[in-house]
Amino acid sequence: MKFAVVVFPGSNCDHDAHYAAEQVFGQQASFVWHKETSLGDADAVILPGGFAHGDYLRTGAIARFSPIMADVKRFAANGGPVLGICNGFQVLLEAGLLPGAMLRNKSVKFLCEHVDIRVEQTDTPFTQAAAPGQVLSIPIAHGEGNYYAEPDVLDRLEKNRQVVFRYVANPNGSANDIAGLCNETRNVVGLMPHPERACELAVGSADGRVFFESVIQFVKAGHDSRSRLAGAR
Image (cartoon, rainbow, N blue to C red):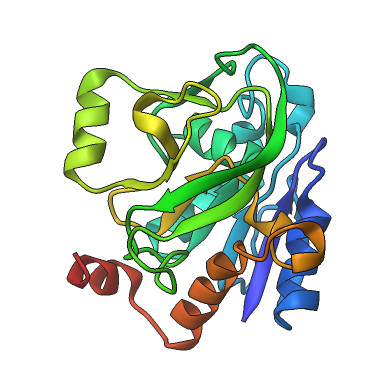
């Protein structure tokens, strides 16, 4: 399968995602500069971590206007699997592909450590190889990872089972211990922890492998994302 890794000015985890896809899992991966207008023939899209446009204004606030985002939205609307990691999650929020916003961490400090997150839903392209309730050790590295949404939005997320990951011990103050979400059609997933940095035991954890294993299975099986994910509910 083919991964497209979108690169914004200030992205710094793009090579990590590319390395995981190609070197760890033996798939094809290509970098897509934010000024390009096409994702090409990608089977899955990754918006990587980093500091897009220096995090000016708000994290992801400028990146949402990058030319490539129009094709990311098209790809997502057609059911294509999209994963936003850390800054990529923030971009998805700013672009309206996922609901809510990010605030400064409750501690007002940048956090860089391994955390445990629990898999709440397995009917997404990035979690289908996981077990319900499985706890993953995944590193975080963020200053604005404190997820916020209005109470009615949080209620809707819970009702629709869109909370895909929760922190076992909340490091940043995120509402409802939310570490990651999906959209209503379940093909767009965003999370603050970095699975691409946890694909080999040499770096402290290989729990992030489940994300790549899941989407590889999902794509290779052939899919109509909307009908397939809807049928898994």
